[in-house]
Image (cartoon, rainbow, N blue to C red):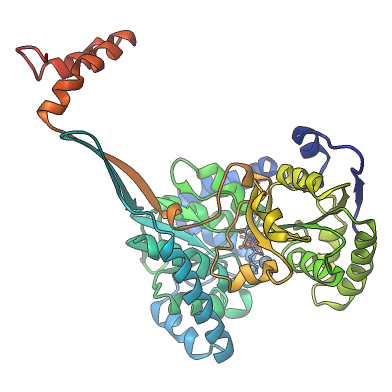
Amino acid sequence: MLNRIDLRGRVPSATELRATLPRAEIDVDAALHQVRPVVEAVRERGVEAVLEYTERFDRVRPASVRVPRAEIEAALTTLDPAVRAALEEAIDRARKVHADQRRTDVTTTVVDGGTVTERWVPVERVGLYAPGGLAVYPSSVVMNVVPAQVAGVGSLVLCSPPQAEFGGRPHPTTLAAAALLGVDEVWAVGGAQAVALLAYGGTDTDGAELVPVDLVTGPGNIYLTAAKRLLRGLIGIDSEAGPTEIAILADETADPVHVAADLVSQAEHDPLAASVLVTTSAELADAVDEELTARVAATKHTERIGEALRGRQSGTVLVSTVEDGLRVVDAYAAEHLEIQTADARAVAARVRNAGAVFVGPYAPVSLGDYCAGSNHVLPTGGYARHSSGLSVQSFLRGIHVIDYSEQALREVAGKVVALANAEDLPAHGEAVTARFPGGAE
Ligand SMILES: NC(=O)c1ccc[n+]([C@@H]2O[C@H](COP(=O)([O-])OP(=O)(O)OC[C@H]3O[C@@H](n4cnc5c(N)ncnc54)[C@H](O)[C@@H]3O)[C@@H](O)[C@H]2O)c1
Ligand SMILES: N[C@H](CO)Cc1c[nH]c[nH+]1
Ligand SMILES: [Zn+2]
């Protein structure tokens, strides 16, 4: 079922590998052309334009875009108790992990009387996006809100697409997740319109104001990703978290049922989702293919899973050794990487590029999607080579605070002057010597 690439017996360079490995033709640049007019319209005409695009893309025109607080609270009353318990567990675990990961301020005494402190300050107001096109994503509410709250962000607004079957409100489970987390500002808007509204602000049909945010985070489809890229600068963004990817590095010890189930699980997100198996075992690859055929036919979202698995972005890569496999998965830089080999911990410890690594047979990606405590908003499209997933740090800025006494400045004055003159910026040096009219020495 999966396309096959045979790299046994030769190990291409990382650059060659990146050109060879399966990857979606997710042309964010092309999507930029599509979302530019949306962003422009929202900048010029605010909520009026949001409602026009909502009608076109979401096939519903809500009476107002902001969800009344009472409706957010009311979503809890209809929430299935088992789902509530699961969301609460997911929230508790995510809080536990993220709280431990918050950076603390560090002060370095450079010399007597001279200190530099790195102070971590939360972003003031952030816009969080929980998708809601092909699936429902209350878990993404948790993954956005928890790190923002742990960071100490003062003002949060959540956006999620309106659903025609729920009268133009986001899905009730998404609203319930917001209620459980104490988020009371929710706007029913999706895709590029959501990012534009968060960036420029706007006035709702009933006069409610969306105050522009400083940072937008959260995953979404290609249109959301393109809008984030377009508006970056006016707003900060987290790394681009687009259509989901899973790569599995497996040897002959892996269970083909586990491997196939995990490849299918992430293909379920989007016809553009990517599932890639890198293995030393042709027998395993055959067994996985067989299992995939059976599973895809038997599961609910057969059509989009089949499209994702047959697409050019998915495939099996045969390698001679686990060592070669590591080079392949590092070049690919998957959003999610599972290690299903003998001595999986040792292999996992050597991975350089991945959004998140899942070790051994009992850490499927779905665990991380919901209840591991880790964050599921992760970089896609090879961005894991240079970017991290969403974390408490995404909502903090490190500010250097420089505090020097007269004596500490006096001691280093000559060096500052020498460097200023070397850069032909003598006024920089003069800003120091002006403080010591009698001479610094
Ligand atoms: N990387 C991660 O961390 C992560 C986490 C969760 C989900 N995801 C991904 O998020 C995505 C969710 O996608 P989705 O579509 O289900 O929900 P979504 O909320 O991202 O997109 C729905 C919105 O897309 C817009 N849209 C639809 N068609 C459009 C068009 N032709 N032109 C412009 N805008 C259009 C609509 O406004 C709609 O509200 C999936 O690709 C999934 O794999 C990624
Ligand atoms: N696998 C997705 C991250 O790419 C997250 C998710 C949410 N719900 C289910 N899965
Ligand atoms: Zn998932």
